[in-house]
Length: 271
Image (tube, rainbow, N blue to C red; front, side):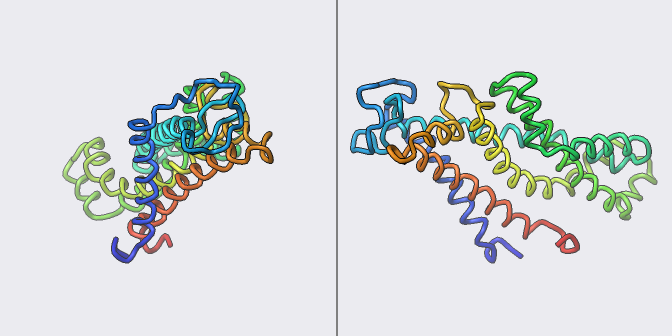
């Protein structure tokens, strides 16, 4: 299936582009501060001056959503980047080396997979303390294993092919085989997994922030904003609705993009 026959990619890219442009362009013409407190106007409804209203401390909701988008996108991209690199390298080594190396890496993966990812992340953050850095660390620890298993499975198939056997026969070094011959053939599948992984990382960050284990106040986060707004759902529903819509659009965009890429790059025998 090509790009033209796959509308998921275009819809997903449009939604992602909308969120990124919204995050970058809005501060250029909308100068409200996401941190400025105005108790006289707390719970003010949407208006011309404040299109998305104000929260329980009188802070501008639109400014906080824009700032929260930066946090969510940063966490999503950085977690997937680090997890993808670690998982790709470990999967390449595990699949190509085999033997004891493969056993050690895969048993480590199995141990991590034995725990629900979000519970393990909660435990790590509870141990190290809630902060943005610890949140990223916890999500990387729980996230690299899926990339490792995917890379290993592809390497096990590729290393039996003629071009790899020929490279080993003429004495090509292991590092050159790994990074010159195997990695380019594994990378497309890792990128597909990464596009889906960004939405998972954003959801995980929002969920942990909702529980108070992510980004700490007063820094805005979509999950924390939803948690704060649920206490005022009937008197000020916009405090929950607007961050929820932003989260929905972002996650839906990355999921659609990942699904579209999966239909293009996933081998037919895997479907």
